[in-house]
Image (cartoon, rainbow, N blue to C red):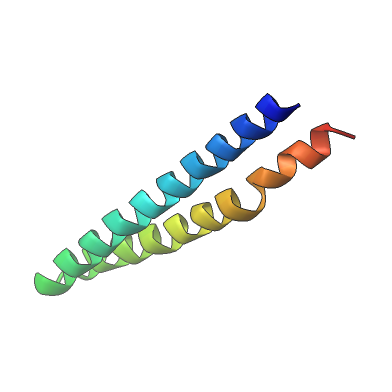
Length: 72
């Protein structure tokens, strides 16, 4: 069972990394749209920031609970 918990831990880290990377790309898009006075680019950037934050939170809270669901 220890190897399964290790796999879940790495999966959680992967999902959190994916969310953080998406949020960083969103910040870059937002700042690019802000400097170019492009409302569509700013909106896209904010969408990515929020989406990345949600994915990060899922990786931090929900993915580790998979081990407890399967061990029942």
